Image (cartoon, rainbow, N blue to C red; front, side):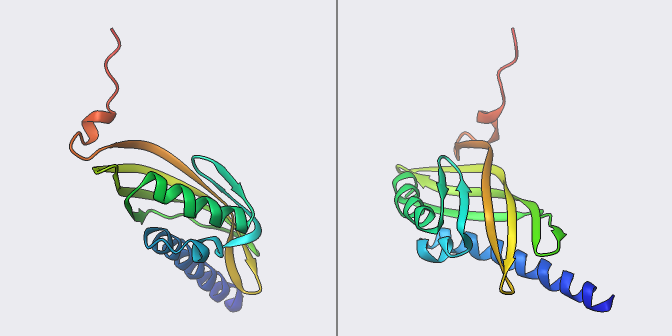
Length: 149
C-alpha cells in the first residue's frame, strides 16, 4: 500500500517534469529533445498533426521557427489522472511570442495522453487547444465577441 502511494507521487512528479521540460525544449528550440519526449509512434496535434518521433521533430523544427521569431510558455493548473503505466490530463498555458515583429499572446491548454516506458514517462499524444490568440497591444479586448445586433 505504501509502495503504491510512493510510486504515484513519483509518477506525478515525473509527469510534471516531462511537461516542464517540453516547454523548455520548445522555447529553446531543442527540437530533437522535444520530440524524444514522445513514444516512438506518438502524436502531436497542433496546427497540423505529426505522427511518430521523426515527423514530430521535423514539424517542430520547421513550423515553430516559420511561425514565431521567439516563444515562451508559462504553464499552470495541470491535472494528472494515473492509471497504472498510462495517464491523462491537461495543462493550462499562457503563450507569449513574437510573430513577424509583433508581440502576441495566447491562452489555452494541452490535452495529454501519457505512457510509462522503462520507468520513463512519455507523451503518447499531446494536443493543443487555443482559446485566445491576440496582439499584445490589443489585449483581452480583442478576444471579446461583438454583441449580437
